[in-house]
Image 1 (cartoon, helix red, strand yellow):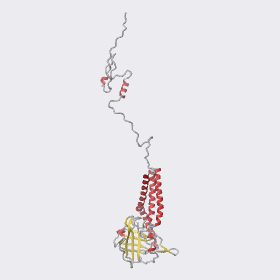
Image 2 (cartoon, rainbow, N blue to C red):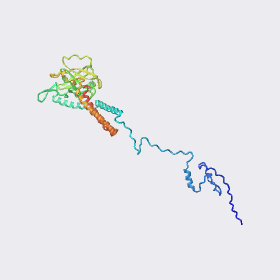
Image 3 (cartoon, one colour):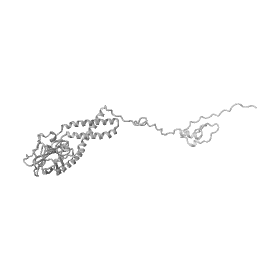
Image 4 (tube, rainbow, N blue to C red):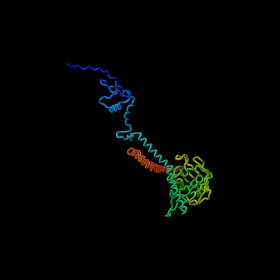
Length: 378
């Protein structure tokens, strides 16, 4: 028996078509009849080592056509540093010109703010308190009949001396402008902070001669701020140790206006204050009033106008007050430097919270001292 050892010739297999995109191949095409013996792999068929589950996973992992690319990672914020802490802004060094210019401007601004606050607000409260105390003192003195009626008084030892500066001597009332003020003795800038002052070289109101009373126009309650509204014929009432005296306004005059006729008999009252814009006076405003009530007994005078100190005259200034004001300004400048040190070392809000109240308080104190060096009628 003869055995045929020749091998059968293999049937040629056609080249496989390129695999189609899983998305573009419909599901019906993928579920074809099982392959027959000798057939090659068909498109969409899983390799022999994959199961149906792994085939689905691989299909989901493959990128789909037209899908959006993944979002790139977010770049780090420019104001953040490593660790998530905010990056502090760059500060100007004290050696830089801009830093010193800004510090100087703000310090001067706080000084001006303190000056304006003192001139318009705090000084008015000081004046109100001083008037309350002076009225109580005057009322007690009137009840005891101890109000000075001349330039000198007799002390406990029997010696004569000038009436102390600041002593309440009269009550001034002008109904036309709603004025009611206690008048003190003396006309220095410090005395006029408490209210109108009687010039010491003149007689008391109601006596024979001209009595002069000075008062401020703008600061410390501005008691004489309304004198420019007076009209001829308005009434002025003064109460002192010799009773109540009535005056009638003759008119207002300024520098260059004619003086009233010389007084031959009777009494006259002259009120003086600053004229012009507030804190920027252009001269002195005078209000002349004649006495219409009885003339009272006039004691002899021991002081005349040439003996009156310059700081007690109209628009007078105290030169020694500038010396004290200089040292107060030095303390203010030192406080300003300390505030900027706090700004640099502690922080902005700490400096504002601690430094600004101190600076404003020193500004008010500085303004209070400076006011004594300025003209007494402001």
